Image 1 (cartoon, rainbow, N blue to C red):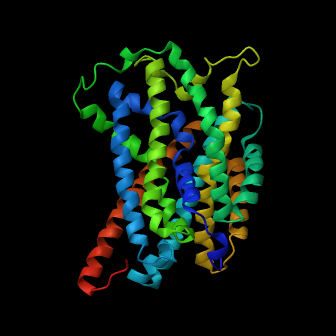
Image 2 (image 1 turned 60 degrees about the horizontal axis):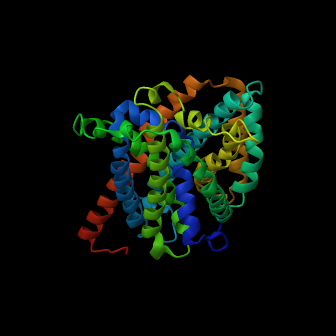
Image 3 (image 1 turned 135 degrees about the vertical axis):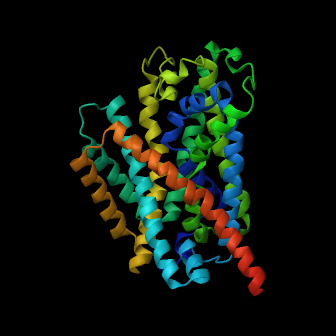
Length: 366
């Protein structure tokens, strides 16, 4: 993209964009993962994960203030040289493309298993690709508006998760700290990955109109994600027994099975169909960041071709390899490890380096 003026987003869109990337397919299995790692106290680790994500997010914003009109690629080029900017563009394109691939495949496999078991995976990915291209090609402003629409659509829908509380048991959460703080600390790794997604701020930040609200905006986005994770996790912990919750791969969907109406028996199927909109707010911004990095790498200034190429490769990957649930689970595990580097280690190291560099050179990028 040649300029940012025609693609600016306001603070509200920035918040919902970051929040949408964080709240993806992982929340369906998050209660089980927390129960396996931390037992009945696993939900407390969400607060530690939130604190870590807020700290890393603020490091990103503080570092990006040094190049208000640029992305991480420009920041690396400014402080390390042109070669670093090129290497950064390559790494960002590969990272975000990999994340978008893993999330899209997870959504396709989930839909195939719950709704359309006889439909080939590549066909589902091809169906995903059409609206994805139409939205992503128009840039970050349309992505921000789409994320805002999806959030407003799911606020009333999320209230249905409170219905199973009629058959819940508060005793499932007690006694607290029965094994000390070690189980809680064991679940921190899971929660930290659940909050990843804020690293898209490395690319989205220059498009923000009122950059003075970037810090508060990204804190609000992380807090919204915390509230969503707490709602889902606590409802599952209260409804399922401590041993039962670990038996379900995606307890959130199993929880929805108990919701029935006189005019609708399988509410979970309807919820899952609408839930695709929420998952799409995860892979679409990641695909945009990958395409934007690729356009900067090849100096085309246009993301439409990279987006189209990536979607075609995505369909080809699903057609040729037909990834199974186990294979995609391994990809998600690899993505978790890489995300910890890009989302946690990189922001902290980058901010510390920028501060030290400014102290010794006398420059101040604020």
